[in-house]
Image (cartoon, rainbow, N blue to C red; front, side, top):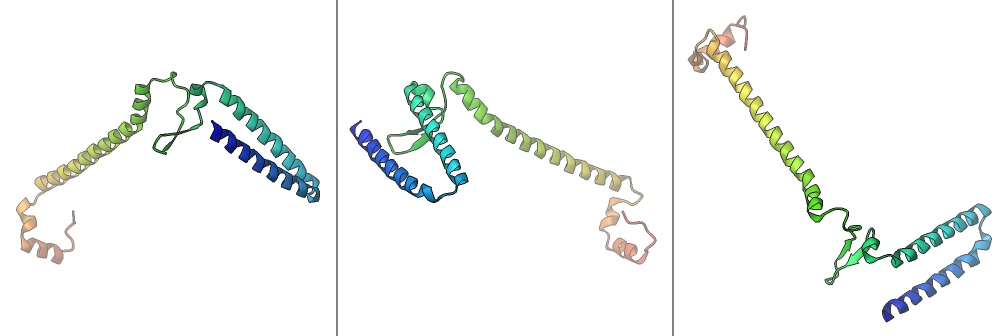
Length: 155
């Protein structure tokens, strides 16, 4: 506690010095700029008052947007007020997008397999129902026949 009080007083003294330096240079500024600075100061003071009132609330409610320091020096963001959502539900909701992505990838894979299978089946159907036997396509003389006879429609 003693270190936080002395650190706070050092920070307050530094803030007062900065405020005095800024106030000294304020006389040279135009009216519009001084009004903006005044509005900003009022806004900063209202935020400061809200921060002080937040400290007075119980620790569970104050962790909504706070940073919590671990013993090993790690910092984590507060998780908000606990109690409104069970821990298992939080984990399930975290895993939901991952499960949706895996299901989508599996669906795409099945669709592509079905599409390629359908294309191969159509090609096999054309080969088997065509007037030429399938052995004709592997005959070297057939390739020469196709090249020399341009009137033959290509498949």
